[in-house]
Image 1 (cartoon, rainbow, N blue to C red):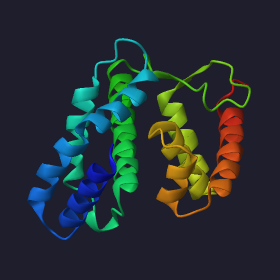
Image 2 (cartoon, helix red, strand yellow; image 1 turned 135 degrees about the horizontal axis):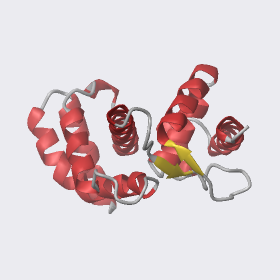
Image 3 (tube, rainbow, N blue to C red; image 1 turned 30 degrees about the horizontal axis):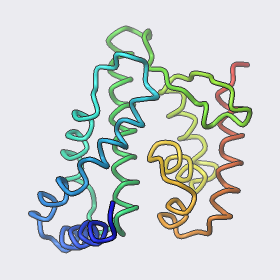
Length: 189
């Protein structure tokens, strides 16, 4: 995204935050391709043949953005973090519905290569990951946010630091600790 379009997105976010409902209508086309990229990253971790596609996931996020507290959106990076969080919740809700439909079977699987300290490919149930993140959040909410932004939103260290208002060194430290904690929590016993 160019510097000009980044400023355009920020301007639209400010307008939307100040109550201009039409700003959201102009914002979505400006960020649509990037949102599809975030959606594709989420779906790459899903089992092949997942019922949702990137376009449908982006559209569902758009519908949920209407209910987001606009005053909390601080800028472009934060907007994408919020959108990614919404995507995670949509996919978890979808997995829960599938599990309920199949009475406990067919849980959605995703790869946690990026989370495993040993970087060995492994799969984990999306619902188990969500439960682990909820547990991590109760222990250390910032570590949970770092995982969400790095793993789900695909933000780099600097973008994550910017979104959370902390230093890149702190992000690296929190990311390392959170990955190790999640790996232990999600490893078969």
